[in-house]
Image 1 (cartoon, rainbow, N blue to C red):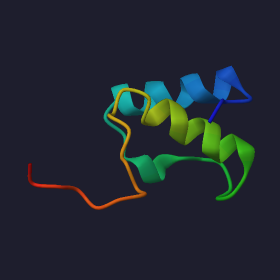
Image 2 (cartoon, rainbow, N blue to C red):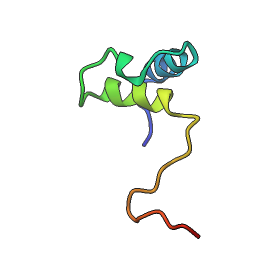
Image 3 (spheres, one colour):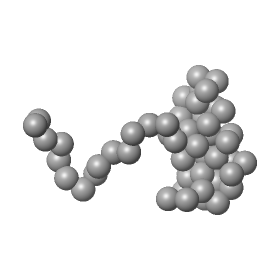
Image 4 (cartoon, rainbow, N blue to C red):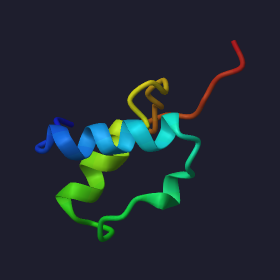
Length: 57
């Protein structure tokens, strides 16, 4: 997913760096700004595979 607002993405990144929880997202759930903020917040986390179960191998 590509962020629409780089400024909002940077706000999310800064919030994580400041130790704020992910529920500190100030934008309405479901909005593009909320998605962009969360993308910035999670940018350094590994992407999770949700289309198949994790294997032990």
